[in-house]
Image (cartoon, rainbow, N blue to C red; front, top):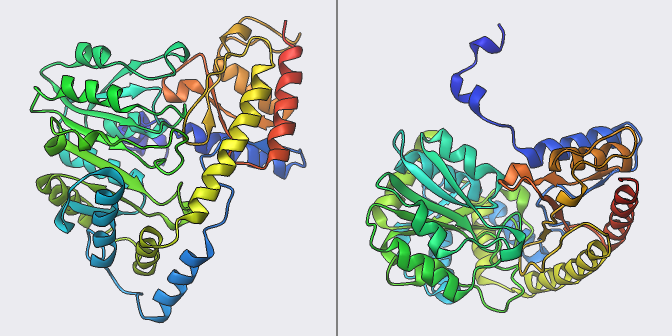
Length: 399
């Protein structure tokens, strides 16, 4: 047996660049190198104790069995209340589907809504998996890119220009992975107004970084009446509650979409873990102060990294307003060399940082932005300070 026995589907699929870079960092570390990995989008905080206690109690109370495919009623009710409380979104429990991570929520949508050749407008820079998930569902990704001069935020006019009679979906995140950009009320309203006349288009808003928002107010595009009935809001527990390993995400959608996603999920994984769902309900209904403290810590780290990177000649750095990423433009170093390695693109730049200075970051090409690279500052201030020192040293050797 060889790779010729693999499906065309899997052969066409690109490997996740973030996961690949994280593994390369682990391999170097296993060889004895002092590697600083800033590649994964994973909070370095532990899950708050009251959430872990709720999971332990749920286990003791017998929440160890299969759950309804769309989720336990306790969690779906908590999500309905959260959407109303935080997002001005009105759903009932039959419009909520809980999945094994927000990634599965988006995959369910792609598989449930797309036919071969349907176009999906993806606002770029985009989260690395959007592109391949759309292709897996038979869709055609149509990316529209905003550069650092626009804080990496696509305009309503760009969206309008990209819409065709084959457009089935518009997909984006705010706060954004990989850029940390946050779309404002007015920016989202303008995009909603452009999409509104096109009744065939479903809007998919990935809001997994909602609670890591430095602007003071998160805005959900589904709260605008013009697209309210055609918007799917995706969220989860990994980022705001430091629950990455729990694998819990969810969506709120028009009932017909929610039913389709539950049908799809029923043939793949069925429901998420029962005791984890009970803990997640407790997270939404309980003390939010640990989440707020994490956000405050991320803001301090952002300032540290932003200041340090801004002092490196040639790097362009903006001021992201959410998530825990900075997305510098490194194109000034293209064509430069340290004498043995020539930097032709962001891929080369990231490989150079890892192989010679043992800092793992992710190339912007994985996110649809070839001139940039992503730094996750979900790491200690000591690690971040040392990483910036190394990046500066690496850039100084290029001429």
